[in-house]
Length: 319
Image (cartoon, rainbow, N blue to C red):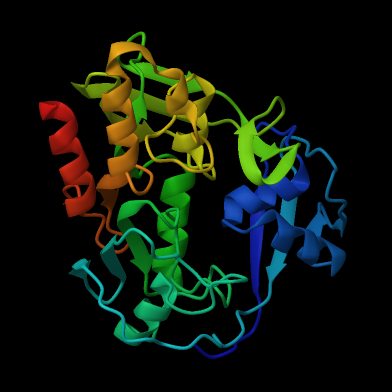
């Protein structure tokens, strides 16, 4: 990807009341850190005047954002196998394997999905920044399943806007400890960084609104297989939400570690065996539905449980 002139975006505030940095981050699919850097560089103005990151926006205000052209991607392309379900000149849909980090970050400079994508398709969208070419949305390292990747900047912007408007359907399959009190269950709870541990997310008053719908597909002895739908897309949303209502994802080392120890009694051995068999978090992005960014055709993709999770589920339903 080559450098070009910066792009200018004009954003009109609707209802107002939101913080400027949050508003710009959500509308342009940028990280809050990047937005704050743009503010510090004087690249964001509100109604023609310099802006402050913490100011609250009034209805009808016009925000002008100068987004510098992405730098050339200095990431090595690597010949790593990819499970590509669909590809044209605009997008790629991949079924990501568990254990693969989506984009380079400290400690993970190689072996990522981006490294593999650059080998497969050297020209990717630069909207997400030089470290995240083509990446419209992400999955955790140990979550398997479906992702759509943008090959052009236009496709990236259209898909990112569809995500913000909740016009992309994302369904997951998860195994969770215990049994839901009702099915389906709607979890509507704000998520932000855990104030006690910045490596974790948590349900925090004042965080960003997050909505998850969980429905029981199979009821096991002391756990359940769930169909989970995202209404929003916050970091670790499914894992945080299920843990917050006392039903963490089976195998989740961050939000569910040791939770199964509270499941005693005559089913103790079953619980211990399920925990032993689940060698990673039991979470899989199983279905993705969106409109093609160029043709507007409805695109539907499904990915069955990978072999490791399918084996765990087979044992759980038969034991």
